[in-house]
Image (cartoon, rainbow, N blue to C red; front, side, top):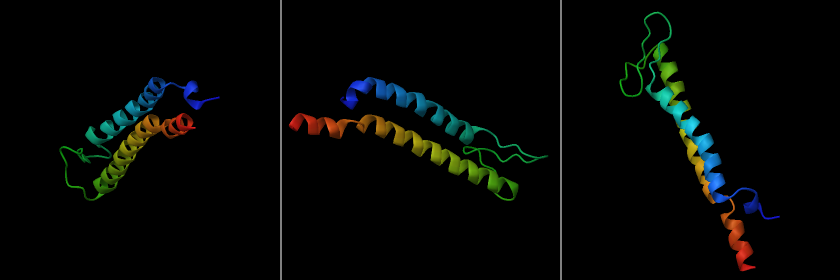
Length: 95
């Protein structure tokens, strides 16, 4: 059975978007939300940054890694959805 019959190209894009959109929304939330932890600890966000020292340093660096990870994951899902089945379909046509 051909694997492209299981999920059409439009179906792959729709499935990937159902994973990518929440990932990017999570990354945007982490990047733009204020990090308020503790008494007067207002660490800011990526646009309006406060001094990344003390308690804010750990908070903001972990947010940075999470935003980068979620963004890379979203790009990988889209590339996988676009490239899935392309190499196999070329081999089948030439055979």
